Image (cartoon, helix red, strand yellow):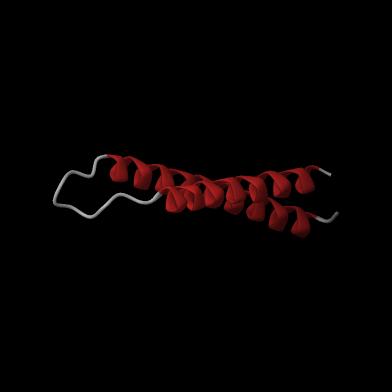
Length: 73
């Protein structure tokens, strides 16, 4: 593999990791915020919405891990 491809693959790997981390922190912050909802404010996310957030985090993690594994080959 030439150096140009190696540099591009490294950039992609870092972008995937950063995207995963941002999404995970964002979703965690959303969950914490929802858990602090008091009376008179909007209702916290439903169980289904929280499950969807969890699925998003798991999907991003899976994509990042798959990309890393591919890059190591």
